[in-house]
Amino acid sequence: MSIASDDFGKYEILRDKGTNPLEVCKIARLDNIKGIKLILMLRRVFGLSHSDAKKVTILASGTTLEEHANNIIRALEELAQDDLPDNPR
Image 1 (cartoon, one colour):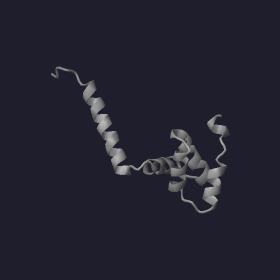
Image 2 (cartoon, rainbow, N blue to C red):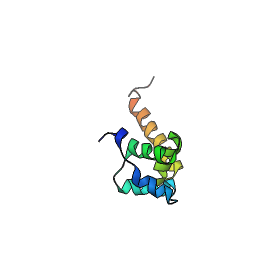
Image 3 (tube, helix red, strand yellow):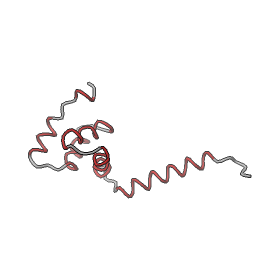
Image 4 (tube, rainbow, N blue to C red):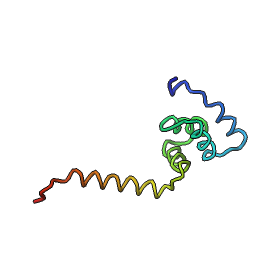
């Protein structure tokens, strides 16, 4: 099944019952929805921007936005160190 043809009806029902995007995202994660499909579901069901949907997925994973940003910075710093020559000038 392609992402374009996915039925997010279960999550629309939860939204209509008043469940917020974070809680719906947690439920979808338990349903094994991941990555871009999770972002797509939040955008379609709640009308969120890509950025806001991504923030919700980060929070639903149990990580704060600050922790997530720090993890990205740390990974980039490690990559930069790997690319440095062994004998600097």
